[in-house]
Image (cartoon, rainbow, N blue to C red; front, side):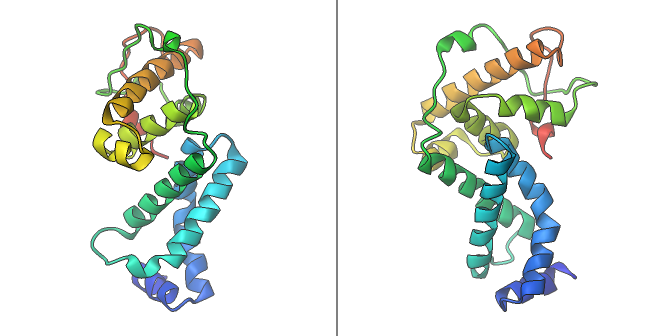
Length: 191
């Protein structure tokens, strides 16, 4: 089924079109949810709630960009809203974890697999993981993140810096990278 037929079918509330849209985009959106969630079950809940919103808001899609991008934005906002509702974003970590580590996003180490990095990102506290996902992977600015999460822009920046440092610490401990300052390109972590 073409994207146009799928979209029209969803607008007409046809179950087969909705199923086709879900089947086409849910695997990639599950990857998005998985990065924000604490576990697989939470990710599945986020995905389900996100697609409920997609179907209920499908009339708002204006064909001014990719359908996948529009769906992704809804899924990301759904994940954030679930975290905020459950007050999981307010988790904080000591500055001890943000000591002298440095992470540069210019190159990816040749043996570093995206799946390993995603698993390490999932080990971060929710606040760090959320800002890291929004900034480095989803491409939001710190100003946009501050508005979405209802925090100060400077808080977004410091959370991101601390998340990068903690991520590097995890990557070092798991021997995914061998020394601080190895370059890891965050945007390549997209599943």
